[in-house]
Length: 267
Image 1 (cartoon, rainbow, N blue to C red):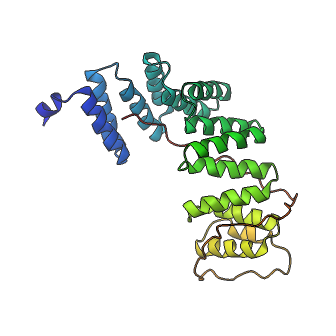
Image 2: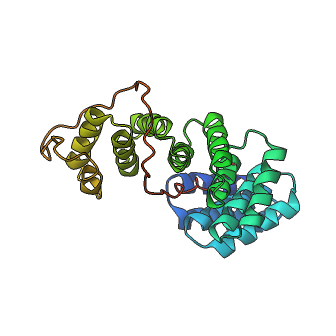
Image 3: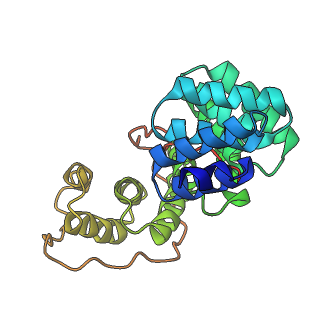
């Protein structure tokens, strides 16, 4: 086996590492990427992929070192720039992260993760219009980037635009029916714009799913409004379309942006 591994190329070890990482076998992935870099220390994809695995493991310093090495070897690589931006964001170096995300979008205007990162920074700066624009761009570029959709709902809620926020959370629930935060936020928005039937439906689903915090949201319902007791009731499907009603100006508790997507690997 050792002799067979010695015959593998750097690209082959990198491919194996990618497969191990995709399967969640991070320690084995690290070993493969390290083998790839022993064969070819200048293999940018292996540095980027190794950094992505370190990030998944929570080792931010090692991840940052790998991304910085990859960037020295290939300064214009958009995925490396956004990955480094993600590290700096997690370290709360907002100016540094913003700079990297902006560079990433310059080199690849379709880098959804970079736009999501810029949205998170704008959200932190309480620039909610700008945050919503970036989260919308991120989701439009990658409709499977559900963290961007959740973040968009949070930004719209901060603007007190609860009607649009509700539509966003309902769309998220269609894709992720078990998402507890989306369910809580959707129910709260429905109450705030007086869509009480929808709110009752969502509260019933939350009770069925035993979502923490659902009773706190239920307490927002007007006094005397009947609520389903239905912890044992079957969950109901979320309606696909919502009619427009005037939005309430009552405050909705602030929700931080959802977790950023994992660092982008390179095959």
